Image (cartoon, rainbow, N blue to C red; front, side, top):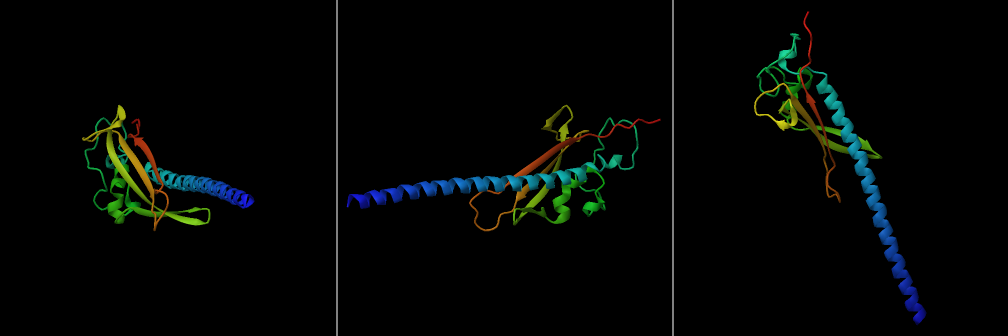
Length: 179
């Protein structure tokens, strides 16, 4: 009889150890998957930021007037008249209206392992103080902060919160010397 209790105790201890090991392995796999998803989201945000950086600073710079800008154009943030597609965006602040043009957040996908993960990509543009990029400005300035947000779209019940990534950059107008 004591041997039976000893065997049952050993089985119980082994079960607790195995369960603890399983939880540890599961947490490690979840962290690894989150990191892979985050890398995919960051890459998508960087690609969108590169597309934004390839445009002019402001509508006033689209035709390349040259010279040194000393005052902002004063135009509101968002797409200008007639810019109804992303391909028509020709300056940085046009992307502030990306969700309105697309009818909601931009939905993209990334492959993580054998699983396709969907995420939403949104862009916000705001004026910032040129001397302190962390201070938003309520009036137009010669500095614009662009923030690209990527958030995983989870479906069904998941045991983890959605993964998020943010990529920020401050833009100022180019200085072009005139002859």
